Length: 251
Image 1 (cartoon, rainbow, N blue to C red):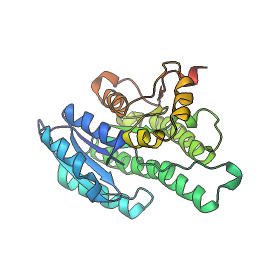
Image 2: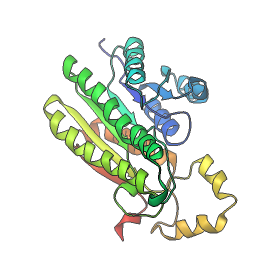
Image 3: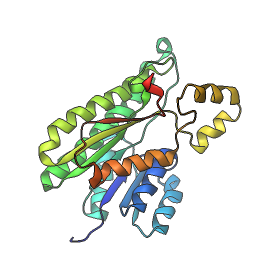
């Protein structure tokens, strides 16, 4: 439809980075589909998007399930008619020494953080290629994907996979006008993380002291970078992972 608003799908959007990203895209004029395992957890995000005058679509989605991914895309395309931007934000953490990681824990981390992002991207890639439309995929990686750190092996390996996936898909799909990028945040202080730090103020300060800018990032800073990479100002950027870490990985 001529003049239709651009559309986006943000996974893991009930709180934190995902919610902030969805709200930033809505502010910039996008109609936004938001997903989470439990659809009722999206009510606050949906209400805020609609308060901006944009359409919001809550979607139940398990990114580790092919059937759930297919169903989510059917819902989004049925409601919006098109999908321009995918933000792969859904993920699951694991803080455990490598020698103690079980196969089930490993598989869960890979299925959600890496395989989920790949198959979500694959589904959008197929749609955009078939409909001959340009589009944009932005995946949330992590500084753990580019640096070594104890107790983060499984998570870091999955996020490193996101970074390489970004390069590979960018090369394959450039001829179709599909841009693929990633963002690797350092520590981002969501309300949930701040609550966790409340009992460990010394640990929080020690982590801040390692960051050259001497603070943590905010969910809104991640959302703003997503919106930039999705927009026309970034039309010549693809295959890149942008480190959003206050200089942490510059040492």
